[in-house]
Structure formats: C-alpha cells, structure tokens
Image (tube, rainbow, N blue to C red):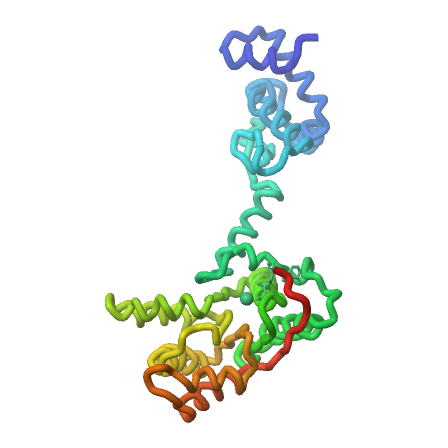
Length: 310
Ligand code: ADP
Ligand code: MG
C-alpha cells in the first residue's frame, strides 16, 4: 500500500490521479476523529469530501502530533500550540484552530509572571509556591501559616488586611516565602505585587534626585496593590530616605488601604533604632517613632527561625 504522505505529496504537486485521491479519502475516513465528524455531518457528499483532502490530511497529521506531543517547545504543528478542528463550511469540511492545553497553560503562566514584579530581587529566589515550599522545619511553620492567612484574608478583605513583618536571620527563607505569597496572589485572583530589595532601591532613589525621577520611581511603590520591602534595615539610613522616601510611600499606602509586607533581620525595636540614627543628624527619636508606628500598626510580626539555607 502506498504511504499516505506519498499520495498527499502528489496532490500537493498538483498531479493526482482520481484513483489516488479516492484511496487517500478512504484512508483518511478510517481516522476515528474524522469518522465521528462525518457521522455528525452526514449531509456532506463525497465530492465535498474530495475537495477537502488537504485539510483532512492536515487534521489527521496534526492530531497525530498532539497524540504523541513532544512538548510545547517542540510542537511540530503548522501553528505551534494550536489544534485543528473540523467544521462544515457551506457544505465542505473546513478547518479552524484553537490553542492546545499546553499553550493555554503557558500563557496563563506568562500572564502570572507579569503580575509578579521585582526590583533588584533575583527572579529565581521568587520561584517558591506554597505547594513546593519545605514545610517540615518547625521554625518556619508559623511563618508559612501567617503567609497563607495573609493571602486568604487579603483576597476576602483587601482594604483591612494587615501586612506581615517577617523577621529572622540571614538565609532562613524570608524572601522565598514572600515569593510564595506573590505567586498565590497572582494565581488566585490575578493580583499584582512588587518586591523591592530595599538597600538597592534606596541607593537608586538617591541617584534619581539629579534627573528628577524620584517622584516617578516612588509612584510605582505607592500604587502597587501589594508591596514587599525586602531586607528593610539593611540600607544606609538618612533623614531624607526615612521621611521623604519611606515616609511618603507608607503614608500614601496607608491612606489608600494598600498592604505592605516586610522582611528584615531586625525586629520592630531594632528597626526603630536603625531609623533613629543617621550620620548627619545624630539621634532623631521622634521621627523614627512616627515612621515605625506606620509599620507596627499595619503589620503582624512573625519571627522566623531555622538553619541558614544558603
Ligand atoms: P532570607 O531572605 O531569609 O535571607 P532566602 O529567602 O533568600 O532567605 O532563602 C535562602 C535560600 O534558601 C534561597 O536560596 C532559597 O531559595 C532557599 N530556601 C528558602 N526557603 C526555602 C524552603 N522553604 N524550601 C526550599 N528552599 C528554600
Ligand atoms: Mg532575603
């Protein structure tokens, strides 16, 4: 028996014999998907079927690829990631295409990753999800539960949910846990969040005075639905950073009822001390206290313990 694709090539080359075409049709009609379509569309006559041979062949070939799917990256279909469907167009079998499940999944993932933005925090340490996070370590269980609760409460009441203040030593997994929060927010309700590595961001903002881009840069931090300030306390503090930068971002977010989450090596009191001292102005307890109130009042403190995982 002549192979189907050799017969098809004759058609493509424009020199089929009637006999060949009939053989091809006969073979194609044995395909269960085509048979099912033919049963639903019994009115289609033989001549119409014959006019649609290349469509039918493409249909069979592409579903054959899908049945032995080599993965989205290697999709051999004419339009990668699309599957053909037959429909009747003025009495003739015709093709239409729809995205396959892998393409849809891929697009959902891409949309999700656009919601998870980071500034100076490497994307790869934000790969965590609550499903994959290692939960066995007792020093982390409380933090994981608080993170899960935060997402649940935020999805119910975005305006009244307090942020988290996650403190603990270097390498216990604070930033990683924030990654899991961001993923879940994106996945459950398409909520955008932004994580900022605070020391680098503050350094950048000092540089932004010269080109007058401070306001524009702060705008992003002010308006993101969920903001995570990573490693707060590790930056070099100045009164300007404290009052005009951090103070103004937190003031705005408080007025708009937008939650802010933090990770830090310091607890509340240690962070307040850090805000109090600067090389230029010495001790400024009152201003530090005022800023700290904005953090304390709008977050729940969670201490995270465990081995350094780095
Ligand atoms: P921290 O922010 O507390 O300094 P990180 O979140 O950066 O710590 O975590 C340190 C390292 O350990 C990272 O490489 C991270 O990928 C890994 N890690 C942290 N928590 C977990 C976890 N629960 N399961 C698996 N790996 C983790
Ligand atoms: Mg960290």
